[in-house]
Image 1 (cartoon, rainbow, N blue to C red):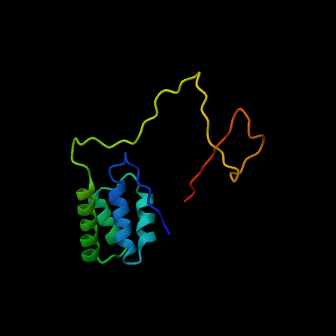
Image 2: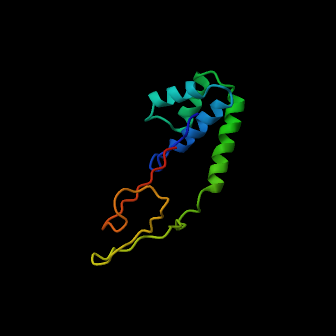
Image 3: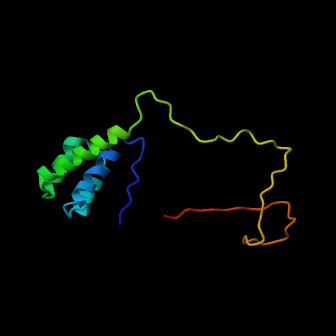
Length: 126
């Protein structure tokens, strides 16, 4: 299993991810992945097509898949100049305020319940 994590500031990252997924449909994901990884600075559409051809993909199938994925991504993209919706933004914390986190009896904790500080940690390993 491979999870793509294309960098938002890399203009060719998403097309490269689409290209590799189209190669996966033909059983050549890793072959194309390795070529693209070796050529990270040259991932424009003409180069992706060249790499796909070089690993022996059926170019008709690959091109149709690649164009469909690019078109689908373009439809989902926000309109130029559109404001990105942002979630709630934290304000400046009040240095004099006391912030409390409710801790249930079933929560894992160490130390007394009336401790001056409670550390809450959460991590999402995917």
